[in-house]
Image (cartoon, rainbow, N blue to C red; front, side, top):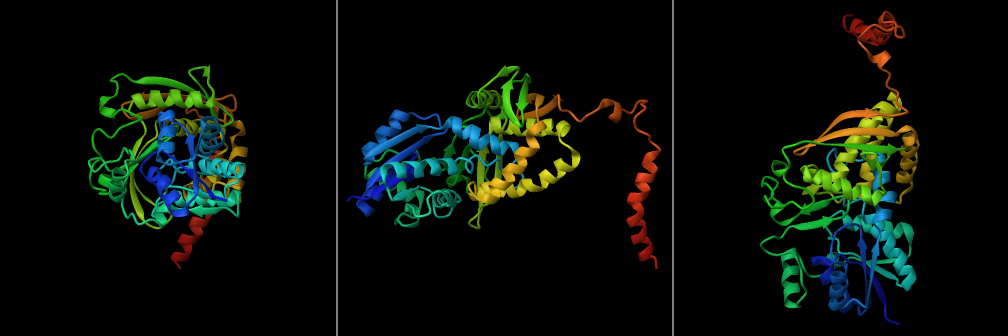
Length: 398
């Protein structure tokens, strides 16, 4: 019986070559799976290319709704940002793609799954941790860890030799990965961390200097930590993301240029565009500032780096991530309200926030006269908190 391999297929350089390589190397039937998570590509062309390259069957699934509701929104509820800068756009997509791969493998009675991630990157870990978490006995093939090609240039040459169409080239050899949440640019001409990215390397957003000279104001409404509408219009998750990506992108919001620490041990330079995600992150924290208790807020913030690290490393289906998610979601019960934002040439500025669950009381915070807070009580509060500092100073003087 011929073996079956389910390949996570993007139609890009690596996976296009992987189809042919897997057939030749394993004498197997290759089933390509393309996950539509908002790349905006021609799906018929993707299917045709996979079949032409040798795939026996192509699954194309629109999983944008699941991606936003069950992966992006839960992550946004935690304010997860890796190393203080990266909003995890590629990281959050991998467990969903791998999950769907396993589902297809079970349906097709395939005993092998494969991916096009390199042996130097994080994606290989993210894919494979998910495979093993969901189907412990699955066999995994990673072409990049086995084939003789040692660079993207050698892949390009192989593709041209075998008439496999690819978008990468020697003139533009960086790698991109796009979904509804973001687009990433890595490798090639970006590997020099001192070199500024090319001026035309923008996809989801305008360069800030080309954005409108007039600011745009928007209101984002939240229900229990999840964005639910824009400017008083209720929107479904995918609709909201598409709308906000357009608005934020047109105003030059969402680009970062960073050097990050990969899980496998090396540093990597990446450029990312995350228009809607950037705006939602800022808006969410603004709403939390008036709806969360101080100690809950601070304790939760201490957990964010660990949660972000788990997502970045690929532990989406690990018990510790699920435990943290439960804690984070419990905290979001009262994060309901509206945030007003001013978008202007790459800047996202909070200019208002309101909530029926607000803990902010003007009569307490005011500098004007009020009858609730006894200012003289602060003297004892300060003296008690200064006691240990006094003792330490006294001991030094002995």
